[in-house]
Amino acid sequence: MDVWFDSGSTFFHVLQQRENLTYPADLYLEGSDQHRGWFHSSLLTSCAINGHAPYRQVLTHGFTVDEKGHKMSKSLGNIIEPQKVIKELGADIVRLWVGSVDYSGEISLSNDILKRTADSYRRIRNTARFMVSNMVGFDPQQHVLPAAEMLSLDSWIVGRAAALQKEIELAYKDYQFLVVVQKVHHFCAVDLGGFYLDVIKDRQYTTKSDSQARRSAQTALYHITEALVRWIAPVLSFTADELWAHLPGERGESVHLETCNEDWSRILTVRVAVNGALEAARTAKQVGASLEAEVALFADDKTAAALGKLKDELRFVTITSKASAAPLADKSSEATVAEIEDGELYVQVKASEHAKCDRCWHRREDVGSDAAHPLLCGRCVQNVDGEGEPREFC
Image 1: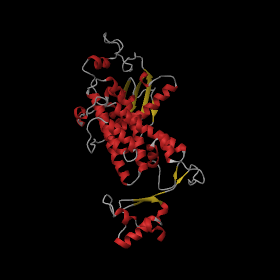
Image 2: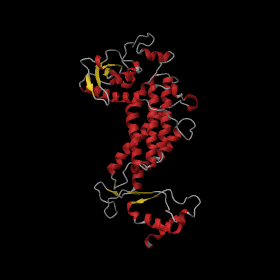
Image 3: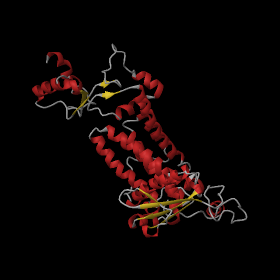
Image 4: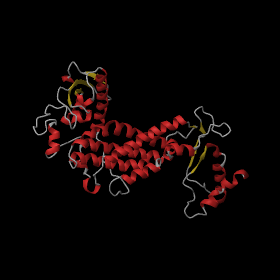
């Protein structure tokens, strides 16, 4: 115990002597070898003097090893200097790597691992950047829509974020930083980048700037970025500060989000299946870009009902020029089966025969129907000269 007495008594000459610190400490954090070292000597000393442990919780981690599993040391020459990584990649890359490893065992570190971490970081940062850039001209005090006035897709993504926030809070409480990073990255890559942000591009770029359709999307983006900046703050401290400075409006202490809609979870599954069918059609040279295609979906009753609620707006989810939904009994012989979870789906893809709108790029039968705008479709004419295109869902 004499070897460890100095560090083992830090609870007295550090914690108990400074007004800005508390005793017992909230957490003692060190490597796994300290169970017989600092953790042990601190416990013995504090119990002898005060009758209780000097900490409320103890968290241990493994040792850092290289890609071959060898312990890093200067003598082996296999160390990676944090200062060099910070200079080349930035401090938040180091922080993200720390947050993305399973520290309960040995922790691997290599230049390849750091490069992959940098890729994950860019996904999160670019997602946040896209959301902020699509809130230009949005003042939360004036333009936030109440939940009842938001489009269904926007309500769903906000609800998805609300559910995710509960999972992230639990992971933080258990010091499961790996779970936090995985869930945030998946949300940015799949729910947002792979679906929601892709779908709302049309609405953001073609509807009137102050339309309900556009303000609904901006309201959702505002709530999500308010949540995202808080999720990443403990890990990506500098990035969170930077994002916070670019968020619109005055921000309070909490974010209030809506509940999830089961229909949108099912629709997202269908969207993935349709993407696969479109890719197969592209490979077969049947279509080029997805907006050159029209899709007909034939599904089980529950899935068809969810898709049918979107009416003509289903095409914005599939990012095709036309999309329809019908029961399985109506499926055509040209439709091919697509795998979805908890349901049945057949997809028929064909090239659109209509002209391309110069503004939204959708191929529609009403392109050129307005003499004043011979290159535009009907809804774009309405967005340019009319009262604006009405949207209900997405």
